[in-house]
Image (cartoon, rainbow, N blue to C red):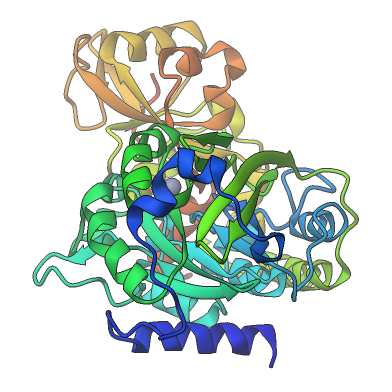
Length: 503
Ligand SMILES: [Zn+2]
């Protein structure tokens, strides 16, 4: 049986098995046995009963299948797993994702994540948590990706608001047999999702607390025969830490994270906490020694590893190259029509870009960009994707920064022209005409170049915990122009905002 068929079968079995219908040959374990650290440390069992299990974990891949730099893409990661981690399809390995698999560079976003799901299928992922960005193409888009993926999408804390039932596009948990161990995989999704994805896409959903969800689901996973529990959470490291006592109580061996792009690989009170940074720049390897005679973890360790130096796996490289060819082909795609060119240093250009950002990310109050970031004009005639890339050639992403009005004004005054609001009668006002209140808090969209201190901006110091939306800064512009369906009879020109909104 192929791996994918095996996975599908396992997956079907799990969702078909009602809770409490555990296979008779699976010894049930009590919670205290697996949870007490001292019990793990002193466990003595016949050597033959100790099974190794290796988890290879990534999160926030965000479609970076080609890597953020040469030699650090998906194919190199696969090469490292084979060369450095001894990975083989038949070995005791689980490849897991903490979610936010797409929304990133064009090679991912132009295909609504289909390309990344394809790559992860070839890499042999066993399961993925649902992150906030899995909703970026709506529930239907998420269903499409779930149907395409040869691995289940997991979340135990998403409910339908009306009925309180689990959402239909994900399963709360799955049980997979690896190296003679029944491993229960449970997903968690960040409760910040309603604020970090398009609100419409999650309007009918409720994201319940992590602890509440785990207390509800873990007994079902146990009843289904799981011997070892792994939580794959699209949650940040402070939330992972906070969940450690719950994990100890419930006998959870591993808590995976995501969303905050942190690098975490440590064991706290016997629970491995793991998060791999982002963009496939690295992964976390967890080594577990599991005693199948006593159903206890006898040893566990976790280590972050950089994705560098791996020989590209030919199979993964071929799939990535196929999507690169399709992305290049689509550059000639026409997304609209323009009568007069839009100069790169014009109010029309600045407003086009910053208004599109705000439309794509309505949680922000104001969008700012350095106007030097626009490298070309948009020529008259048919507007192609290539023309938009000409304007915004760098692979920047949008960062959601929280600032006081005073800090906002300081940035405007320090570092040259920015766009996204205006000066009226010597006062700074937002696009809607409201004056900036120095004491109020604003959510401000900037590009990651500005956030990192480019052009002297201070955003990174002012809000070190800003949220990286991972949204390619071109995508909202492409989406807005496309949505208008302009043509020679109905060109883009009258839709443009040419008002002076430059601060
Ligand atoms: Zn996220």
